[in-house]
Image (cartoon, rainbow, N blue to C red; front, side, top):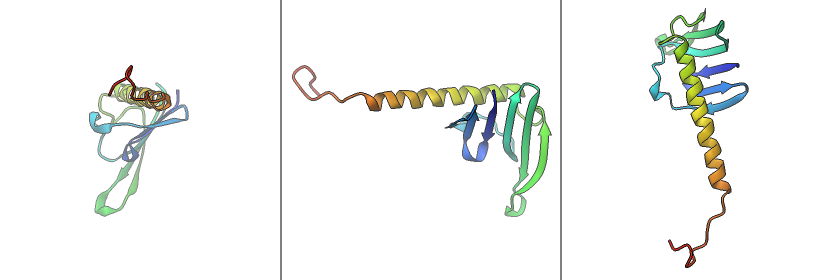
Length: 108
């Protein structure tokens, strides 16, 4: 599994499938710009600074250092992505369903 998370855009991409997620449930560390996750041994976090109103790169870290709850943070992202994907699929199905006309069999 390959995962990318960009907190500023509230987007999680898993295996090239992107979904906007609700990040209010997450404890996102200050300065986290992005996460790249390839497997449990390959996690890279990109950090940035907003000091003086200018974005500047601070650097990268390997592993889960700086992430709240460590690898569980990645698992939360996967769960939110899965929920967003399911909601989108359900929305597509409901849009495909023809609306029933107002008849005696289907009163509104």
